[in-house]
Length: 496
Image (cartoon, rainbow, N blue to C red; front, side, top):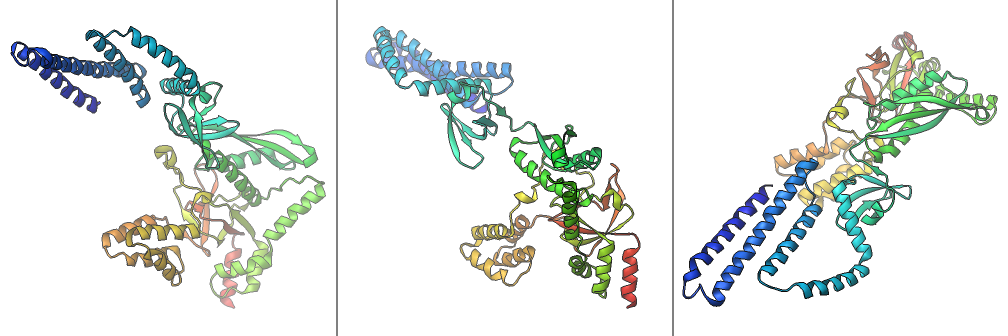
């Protein structure tokens, strides 16, 4: 808008100056006669035509914006100004007495020939004009082509550039987007999705529905402002299972596959903690055997004893650790999962055996308020990729020597944070060094490590949650110990 105003003022002044010169010099014996006068008059008329095109275009675009409530796109501006320029050129040439009949006849023949040769391009251009006018597709939206989602990266007068799920780019003619029904998935809108899974037939369906609803609503990529429905839809006796369906809304269509993978992962961990048997497509005896094998593998006392001995204070003997493992139950949590204890362990104590957990607000409303979506564990950089990124960022400051510095520091450090602080010493300027560390080491919440005793309490939603509220950084293993048992073994170890 500001550019339009600043362009109109010089055009108006220029046209006014030309008309003033033409009128003042009309009686001049040199500039008022002959070729000189015709040149001045022609220049004034052309400047006036340009001013008229600019003013009419501004008025039309402003009127269209006020009626539609959205600013005109670049493609629409080009079309409007092209039509106005054609009309102004036609009127100017007619004013100078040029016979346009022959020109129009010849141009019509040429246009027809060119039109037949450029029919696909012209159809795409006209389709592009319709798409820009309707605003049906925006950059960032996804369209379904041949049952495959394609994310629109850019749009022009002829085609749209899209990116397929495998990362490859494809050019989509505008005519293809308009010649048939095309499903558009808005980038800014939530999208409804569903997911089916099998649950055991010998377990109350409502308990499975409640557990599944909670684990789905805990995902940051799920729109929690919309209902999440979980219900059984069919019995499948041949597999001794009940089929359940989850209906939920994703914040973005492209995140649907990530959510489905996380649901599968968390259902396994939730079933394991709540001692829910997984369906088995054979006889009941084999199903029970499979579940017993899983329990025995996870609850192996001899396998858990070393972890318990390392987590507890020194002096806790291997025999005492194995005895504690026999009386306790193992609880596994998926990466990024909130530590919610199963109902059967109410009143027990919890010991962090493996993995790390970090403190989070009990009710994190950041995604709903600021549309901030934290990365899932599967989206974060792995250790090798993180170190490669560290070397790349350092090379932008100190040059190619950065990779050698990272390799040398890696032999002397044990954690990623130590590595970052070690290689940051290669940066001489303190301000740039601090900025580098701030970028590489984001502020991290308080972290709980193996050996920490975790308490549990009822939160506002009635769940048996950790105190304070914790999330798993990677896979986390908690040991649920009956109340008083841990203190008993600790006193025995101290006495020994």
